[in-house]
Length: 359
Image (cartoon, rainbow, N blue to C red; front, side):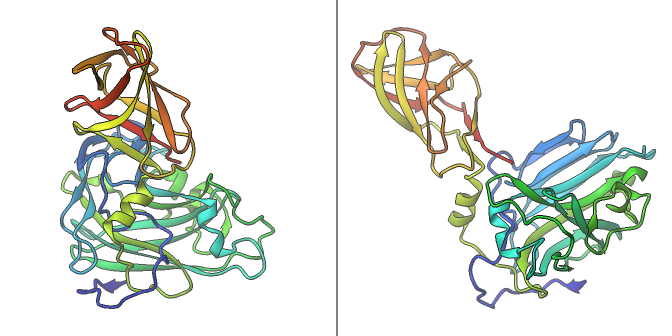
């Protein structure tokens, strides 16, 4: 573990980092969410960063916070313990993670002759000294490799060299758009996950060996955890954190999640029936797979026609013909238009559309 660098003057090669939004710069859903831990988890703030939680009484606030290490990122994820969990049951867990598509891992060559080492690095601090665990988990073959790391109240860089895994008899990562691996940060767990010996070399997954030696983030409501500058790259050396244009990062994130939440024109079409305008919502990026779509209410959109505007009155199935590029508006309106005339679709006030193709 080394002291955080104070600048990023080196100009590294582009595209080394297999982690998306490692600088925590994009947070489309929210900047801050409270009460995390009460459900199985989800994507709450910074894009691509998932909280996974089970059976814990602990609660946390998760936020995108402008407190990153100088020269690395202005932003970080902050987790603030708001409810402690003093009695840890065996099956409890609380993790921060990123899921990774198999086709984005092919450069590793894992599971075959010539497999490569990878290095995971990240910047971390906390409200006190803790021991937490980072785990690289192979979902395709149920194998894992872990490292115990320590926090201080200052930003430090943790470097974790994952050895090549070529001789385990397993298959390579699947070359597709499904989940093949996860990068986990274990922050709280019961004996089911801590009762063994930490798997510091590649091994077939054993639950008790995933987080042995772990402290609990939920030990006290004074506890905070901060992380940013997460990078995973081929080779045994942690190179300078890769700085990326925000438009590039946003584009990568929008492969998995997109939103419309400002009052703006979002499509055009025509009146197919008296109460049914059809039109197209074109996605800003090609999505990982055909997404699910959620809208805020029946009045999420209004349709302009003949110098007037009316709102939809049924949001149960507002879209059909959904694919990786677009979705078709298929609305039932509060009043009728004229069949064959044009229609202009506009977001209505503070309503939203969420388009989700997350792993």
